[in-house]
Image 1 (cartoon, rainbow, N blue to C red):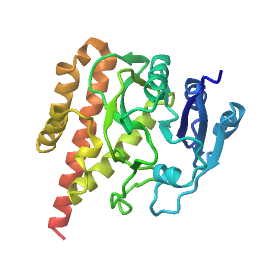
Image 2: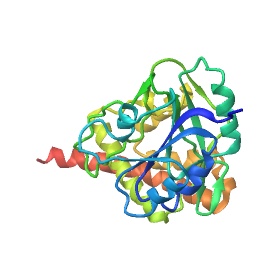
Image 3: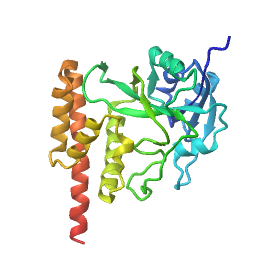
Image 4: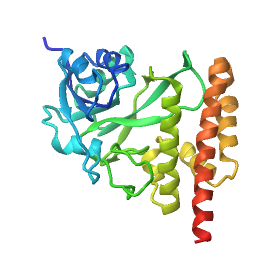
Length: 282
């Protein structure tokens, strides 16, 4: 009996040889795996091909669609459901089993949010701020919208921190994924600098859609909207992650993770202030 899960996995890569093997091992129960690679110069594609994954090259032309939506429009899918992963993400066995159970038979939902554990500074964090991402959905019912962000400084080819637009009802899976980046910390800091450029620019434009980037909790959405208006947003995020969400119980790693979140949200506010100040004197 074929016990593979009828889902097409899509893994985004660019120079991910440190991460890709463990990511691929975690999705070995899925019937179809695409590694969509952006011209890696390391052994990412070689490692992926050795596991039997289908490697597809992606070269961005600087226009829409960006990489995730391009995949929906161009990959030769065999299945209706897709699971999006970054190479530094892994599925726990419990999540694999839950996905199998929720999709067979076909569910009423058209997509599912998944939460994350973070491996940070050598420790898997059990507390602190968590994100939810809509990574599993019926490809006929979801799409990644254009966010008018092609002119943002340091813009890149993959959609930013927002969720696909979903037709129908979304559920939340109980089991988590693991974010486990093997690259040095400075790579993570560089990503946060780019992400904060993007988020600051979209907040100034007023095009950041909270309903598509938040998890499903109305309380969480309200907190996010209130938090955006705080001048001390970074400090508020530190208190939320380290104290309210018990990041203190994760020791030094929990402290440093909360500080990184505080810096990230402070960067957004500072970049908004910088742009508005610069525009006011032109």
